[in-house]
Image (cartoon, rainbow, N blue to C red; front, side, top):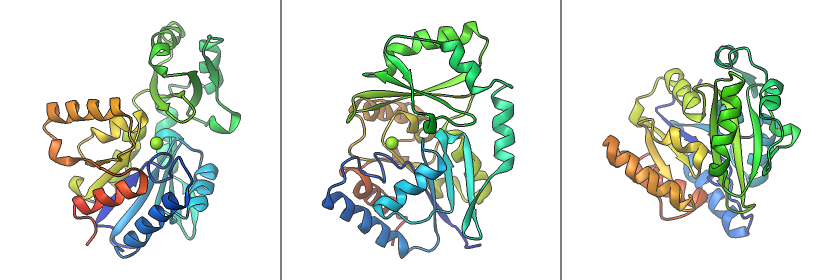
Length: 267
Ligand SMILES: [Mg+2]
């Protein structure tokens, strides 16, 4: 196993994977990949809402390298690379099972039932410990109603909302209580055995928010939602961690490269 002294934990869609697949954007990915290749001590974890198979397809599509870890399904599954393949981290899986309180995804779906303006995402977007919906427009207006239906069913679920400005749809993930991307990043940090300030997290949207306020170094890519940027600026000031949060000027992979240089993770 290689010695990891620093770790880049990064979101994929809208962060390392550009939302527009133009030649320029793909060239920026290639530049980042080339820069990281020169840093063997920099470990890599992708932290995504995607399933493992869709995450692997996504990185192959834009030429991103094979990581040391995949955190998939919005932090509800962790896979580690071993002998050229990815194995599910069974210890993490057992922890998710416990946090879901014995509730199954289908029971959560029936507790919510039919609601105008929200619909279940495609089957391949659902996971063992995650139920996912689309919302018409921003998800904020639906949260109260969803939460009250879940409360009535006695479900203890963590609601994670994001907004996709390209499709103009909201993404609403229902995860085990207390679990989101930050939970998995904490788990990686504990396992990788690196200092907290040697871990940098990069992201662009609402489902990255908790991981961005967990105390690690943070790269907010330039294309991140303006409301999220304002919120992160306020929150990081309130917590005294502004020096750990870098707002990149550039979007996507170029913004991540900019941030890695800013924190001295690349020589
Ligand atoms: Mg994203």
